[in-house]
Figure (cartoon, rainbow, N blue to C red):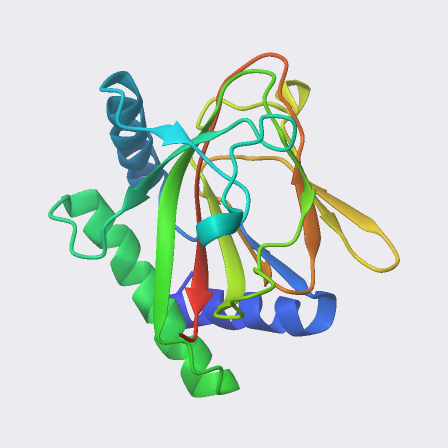
Length: 200
């Protein structure tokens, strides 16, 4: 699929449904290379428990979330991370041109959910900081099956959407609108990249 067609489908789905799913936001090859990056960081103890809140509200809370994360620097020298950011930058440019969203920055991290870990229902936008406009999650699990579960649950006003974390799949939704939850997998570790498109 041509890049602009992919982006257009995502944006139209966001308008129509309040969320968008793309099964080919990144290639399988890129997803596997990013998976290897994540596992290398994990094996080198470069990932740390994520927290809840921001600044003085920050608190580690394993009853709410159990993932460990590692931030990806904007100026990364890793070739595969550069490919990822090229795609994200292209999407932001298209989003701004077509929807006048004024996105001017972003932040992304690797996320490792050990078997059985989870992230309870939440919103991605801080009360004291409204910069996060869109949440974007990209999955890196090349050997996943429906039996592995570990679904992302999006809680819409009238229904719940359940999404399996297959490699290359991306999920986009408004950070201040859609509550969501990461359900545990009882069979495998769950790998992803999560981040936010921001206007501040």
